[in-house]
Length: 268
Image: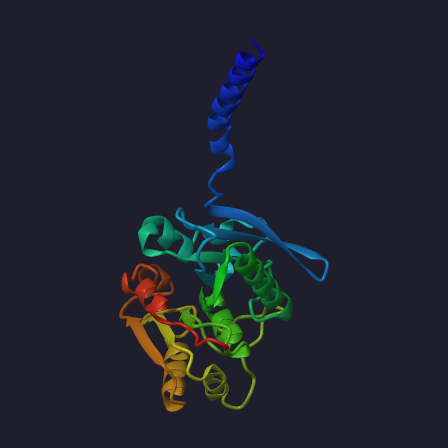
C-alpha cells in the first residue's frame, strides 16, 4: 500500500511540474520597455526596444537613438512617438536591433555634457542587459538628435560602427538661445574638425532640401568635409521636403540592411 501511495504521489508531482515548468521557461519581456539610468545622482527615464525573438544565446546589434527638440521632457515616453520608434512600429520586421532611446531634459541639448552622459549610460546599460554586440553599435538621431549624433560620434571614435544623422548640423540653427545648447565644434572650421574626428566611420546623412529649421547647408558642408577627409559617407537629400525628413529616412528599406553591413573590427 505504501508503495502504491508513493507511486501516486510521484505521478502527481510530475504532472504538476508539467504545468509549472512553462512559468519557469517564461520568455523575456520584449517590445518597448521602461528603464532608468542614474548619472551624478540624477535619475533619467528611457526606453529600450527589444525584438520579439530576442535571446540571450546570441549577441545583438544595438542602436542608440537621439530624438528631436519637440520630444524633450522627463516622462520617458514621448521620445518614442516620433522617428525611429515609429518606423519600428510600422515595419518591425526590418529592425532586428535592440534600441536604446534616452530622453533629453527640457531646455537642454544633446551636446551638453549631462545629456551626453545620460545617453551613453542608457546605451551601456542596454548593452549589458540585452547582450549587445560591441562590434555592431550604431548611432542615429534627428534634428537636435542629429546634432547629438555628430557630437557623440566625433567624441567617441571606435565606439560606433556607423552614424546616421538626420536633419542635424554642426553650427546651431538660427534663433537657438537655449542655455545649454552649443555648436558641436567651435573651431575655425568646425566641419573639417568633426570630419577628422569621425575618420573612416561609415556615415549616412539625410536632410530635406527645403528644411526651414536646420539649414540643409549644414549637412551638405559636413558631407563635403567628410569626402575631403577621405571619409566613408553617403548622402540622401529629399527635394522639397521640409524639416520632417526623418519620416522618409527611417522608412528607407535599405537603411537597416546598410547598418547591419557595418561592423567594427575586433579589438576596436
